Image 1: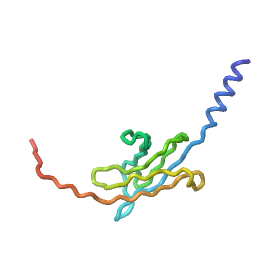
Image 2: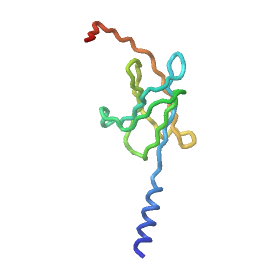
Image 3: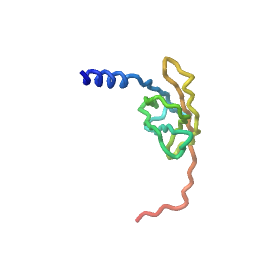
Image 4: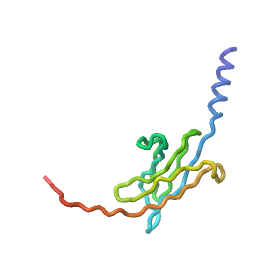
Length: 117
C-alpha cells in the first residue's frame, strides 16, 4: 500500500515544476549567424555559465530550464563577435516563451606576431 503513495508522489512532483523557455535568433549585419555559443548566466555569479546553447544553421537557439527565481542574463560569445549582456525578463512571455533576438557586430583583432615551429 505504501508503494502506491510513493509512486503517486513521485509522479505528481515530477510534473509540478514549471519550465521556463527562452528562444531567439542571433544575427549580424549580413544576416543570421550559425554555430555561435549563446550563454545564460546568473547575475549573482557572472563568471559561471548556468546554461549554454549553440545556434543552428539559421541562427536559432533555444533553452528549456527549470523555473528559477535568480536574475539571469544572456550573452553571445565568440572569438570575432562583440556582444552585450542582456537581462532576461520572464514576465514578458509570448505563448509561455521568452523571445530574445540578439545582434552581434564584428570585432577587429590585431595580431603582432605569429610563430610557427
